[in-house]
Image (cartoon, rainbow, N blue to C red; front, side, top):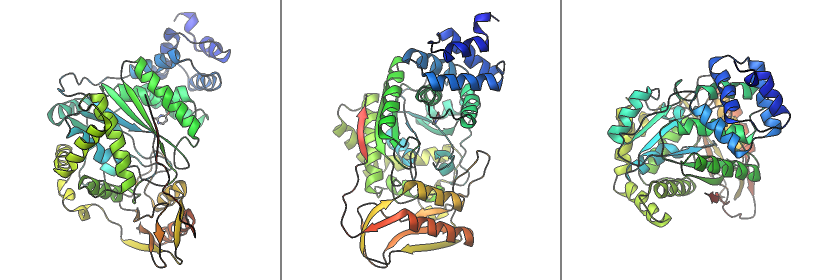
Length: 438
Ligand code: URA
């Protein structure tokens, strides 16, 4: 190997604040992929990047090298513009489940490779798998065939996509180098760009229930991802959104699936539908099938009114081996054995529903995973969660707990009671959509 590409030499260059060349970055990513760099060398480089940062050109080179570390889906035979949406993760965020079929019903292909829930954030794949039989682990070939046939696929990350990210993310997780904007950009965008997209819409969340707590840091991340996407010739927009209270009224895999089915039937909660429309508008604008946000919203609303979005979801579920009868009868989704209402003792107004505490309560019930290898219970969680700004009467329902274990139910109940705050004064509904970047 060329001595100038030795790990210790490249680590020293980054440690000393130099910008790495594309060739140097490719050597680092190759080292992560083929195992020729030891974990301690990769970790040292990650920490040097964390401390020294990266210029835009370096982040673009890192994203490209990570994307090229695996296969890139060939969707050239898919006859529609291809636009995906990615969320940085939140609590009760089930937008992808109904947004993908809505957008696909407007004539835009949606190649969606999603993740599993980890820590306090839920994952689209776990929600999809609450549908009996639904397969998320399609091969890249099956994925491309489904994209060609119905213009949409909702699948999990395959081992073939950006393997360098898998290695580097696992090391970041245990070396305190997750919260680094260039590393986050390269991690998210390398996987998205390998899906075969033409354009991308990002939902970048900030607040207690988000991965980025701070709004200005989230804006920085959003702006960085927009510029990296643009530099890679994939038009990218980012919507900056609040994640202080859960989205919609349901948290938990099957419960969220049922709420998404309600959205497809035109009965979705206001906050969830507002976010769905704003993200969908940006997808349609980038795809060139609408000229204004208002026109895009009208097309999206039409897919709900005429049943075409629900029909498209039925096609997805059937194509991926799921029991499509759940769309007509959501009681076929897994349900918990225990159910308890949490009711208000007093009259008042909801001033806070702490998304992070609700997420921890859902984790306690078994709805999520603390470690990647944990199994999830699809049936447990919360429904009928109140929203900030709601008025409640004595005896009014604040939430319904769905559990499969008495002790866990009792603990989750206490946690949810703590997460919801009531006040005497009416408070306005909080702002959900902060800004659209790009
Ligand atoms: N999600 C990712 O896929 N990667 C990150 O680095 C952070 C969030």
